[in-house]
Length: 158
Image 1 (cartoon, rainbow, N blue to C red):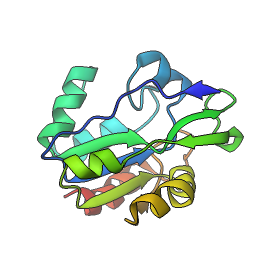
Image 2: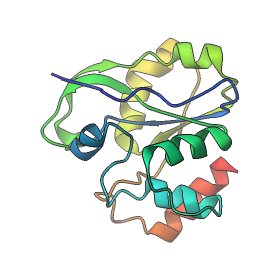
Image 3: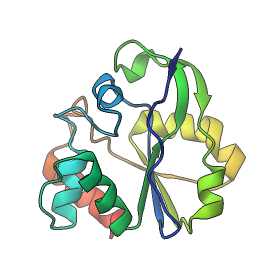
């Protein structure tokens, strides 16, 4: 069983909650979200908000809070082979209710189909708030171009 080692990023101004599935090996090593250099998440946000590339964890946290974005994952712990979403089993979900109680979250977005699957199974019944599933920013989702990711995500973030 691998434990999620990254605390959520949010404050009492956060209006959008973005949830991934579970941190990749690279993200767990970096102890921050979307740590794989090929993941398009941070580059995509920089383009959407017309910002300079985000270089480190502190810049990324500040960026999220400035743009009223909260960030966490659906899964608190699971068995997983490397970073393979397809291998996830024995899921224990994160409890997002305490974020929803402290922040005026207007929209929940899940980053990809795996996050959507586990959100709908474990978190939706608990919180009763449907999530919007957007295409995964993972390098494994090569079928969706970067430009298309930017267009789709932009519609839901701005």
